[in-house]
Length: 398
Image 1 (cartoon, rainbow, N blue to C red):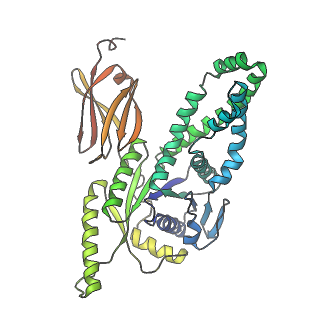
Image 2 (image 1 turned 90 degrees about the vertical axis):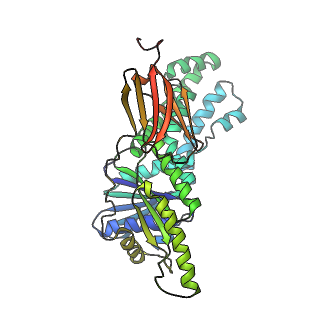
Image 3 (image 1 turned 135 degrees about the vertical axis):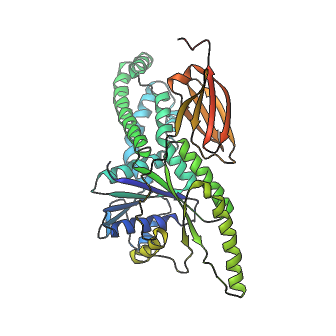
């Protein structure tokens, strides 16, 4: 995929749909062929644009096109055949029919298919930029983590060395099951390829996430955790947008002006605390709800201040993982995570380092050098997490 992929997400109700639509509208007005796609179950993208949308790409105005993904319909169309294959094989191997039905209902498949549909739509047109209006933060984190988690699940359930499984099934249920397994394995192989492509798409330099928040402490705390969770998955955040910033009343007097002044002071304090996440763009709270491309362009003008909406999105943020030699017999693995006050836990799982931040776990595949080492300590600093390793005498010379 050659188009830039820009995903908008944030806590429910912060206005991410409006800002995603405004950004896509501004990109199209600037001469780029832009597609804005919504995976949000709320289906509010069409309301913001002022046009009815479906799963098919609709021309909104000029170079601006839009679509609304319906995950439930995708499940009916795309998942039915594969589930049928799996039920057949499991039943043939002696699994009870009811159990087989339950085993093939995989959590998250709707979100996974929605992401696959975004990739299909993006590849199916002449787009310069594809803007995705994702669901609320929790759903988006699950969505973006699915390709890796789903691939791991498939590998454990149906190993790559499928000839071993084929022989096992043939011995248990007869030769007919082996042919059924071949059909299932082929379908699973295609799914695994799709998952690999999705993982590559999400971690590509041409893909980034833009986080939307309102200047409130609870929302800001969730935003900070989201930045860390995305970094754990190797997905780049290229911007944070504070929406609904109340106007500064200046020297005006009266109850309304005093309320605005107090509220703006609280919001400024929250924004100041987010300074370590980089430059935070702001959008003023508007009296009227912006609907339609004219109103959305006005929002984009206030958001981007005449700059390219993609400005800074291709900046090099540095490597997520880096190994440095910190002594004659010691190495340090640096993980660039904005952990802050988050809860952190580390564990060694075979050749992987399990990093858990605020309950979200990520297996970091260790470089070959560190696989032969043991963890001797860890600490947090301004650049993230530093984990110290020393050679394991039992493994070092192997």
